[in-house]
Structures are given as structure tokens and as C-alpha cells.
Amino acid sequence: MQLNLIKTGSLSLNTYKTLKFEGTIENVESLLQGQITSDISELANNNAQLSCLLDHKGFIQADFILVKLNDEIYCVIEESLVNNFINQLEEFTKFYKVMINPCKLAVQGMINSTNDEKSEGLTFFKNKEYKLSILLSISENLSIEKKLSLLHWKVANKVLLNYLFTSEDINQYRPNEINYDKSRVSFTKGCYRGQEIVARVHHLGVNRREFVTIITPSDQSIDPNFKIHGEILEFLNYQIFNTHLKRDDLKNSNLPSSLEIIRTEYSN
Image 1: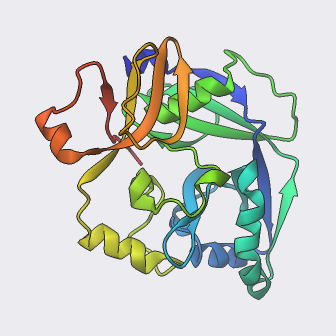
Image 2: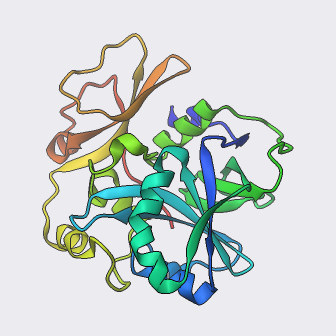
């Protein structure tokens, strides 16, 4: 079912903003390497990288996509997170002679099959079947073929288990709780804010629950015992949402057969 819910094409991501890190590339990378969860040294030119910013307790403050173009680094971020992102970093930027400024690059989102070699855009997330990409443009009037809606974008991200973080989620989750440890965290880079807690949870913690996406018919009521994370999407007579399920229930199939459960499958 999940493959039929994902539609390929493109759309303008008007709810996302582009920020530019102003400063030498060496200073920008040094700043980010000490603050964000991903390894900025692995971000090559004309590539994109998922990352997030934590507080000292390991709670997520912002989620974003980093883009490197011609030795300049940009941040593509949901608009409700912009102020918190800048506020969290501004106490450090002055030490690196870096400024974070909004820029007028429009953001286009793309959903393509993984084997589509002709597709444009910078891929930031993929599995065996699909990939999610973005393209930055100076024009807000992008020429888009096979135009998709924002709902199509949200559905694809939810089905692929890429959680779309908003301001309502600030201080609610650590990376391992919403699968960010699999797509946004480097466990081999040096220290960053919140790193000690994230590493401890990863190496020593016992996680008895799994973050999943559930697809169920729209006419079926949702079990009130489910703790739902983010939006419940209504699409093509289905309800699509994220929750946590006990691993024992998943292992022993102790769940209603009417639920289609999507588990993690992330490819870097």
C-alpha cells in the first residue's frame, strides 16, 4: 500500500526558508562541526545533508537540511524554526566571525524513484524505492513538471519515516526517539552540544519501543492509547500518522491486522 501513496514529482516548498552562513568556509564549517549532530566534513560541494541542533540535555531545537554550493553553505529550514535556530547559534557565531542571514533562494522539493538518474536536485534522504531532494533557485516562480501538493510531500516524508519537525516539537524529543539517530547523527565526529547524552543513549540505552508510521483506513477509529507524534494526515481514504509501538508487539504481531506498519529503512 505505501508505495501507492507516494507520488513522484516536484513542488515549491513555500513554508521553508533558506539561510546563508556568511564567512570563510573554514570558519563556517568549524562553527557547525561543534554545534550540529551531522558531520559537516562529509558534506561535499553540490550535496545536501540532514542535520539537527540540540540543547545541552540532548533535546532537539531545530531540524534542517544543509546545502553546500560552490564552497558556500546554506540551511534549508521550516519557517517556524528559523528564530530559534538563529538564537541558539548566535552566542557562538561571533567567535567564528560568521553571520547567519536570510536569503531569497526559493526551495523546490522533489520526490523521485531511487533509480531515476535523470532527476535534478540534491538528495538528502532515500530508501530502496524513493529519494527526497531539494533544489535552490533565485526564482520563486519555479518551472515545475508533475506538480505535487504540500500534502503529497508530507505523505511521502511520513511514509518514508522522515519526521518533519516543527516549532511545536522543540524540547520534546531526543534524536533516537524519532529516528533522527539513523539519518542526522554522526557517532564518529567530535563533540557537539548534547553529544554526550546522545552517545550514551545510543550505546547504553535499551529502547523497548520503535518509532513507526501507521496507515489505516479513514473510516477506522484510531486507538486512543497511541501517542501520536506530529500530524495525522488524511490522504486517499487513509489516515497516516507516527507513533511508538512496543518491539515485543511488533515481533509477536500483537496488533490489529487492519494496520499497515512501516518500520525504519534508511539508506545514507
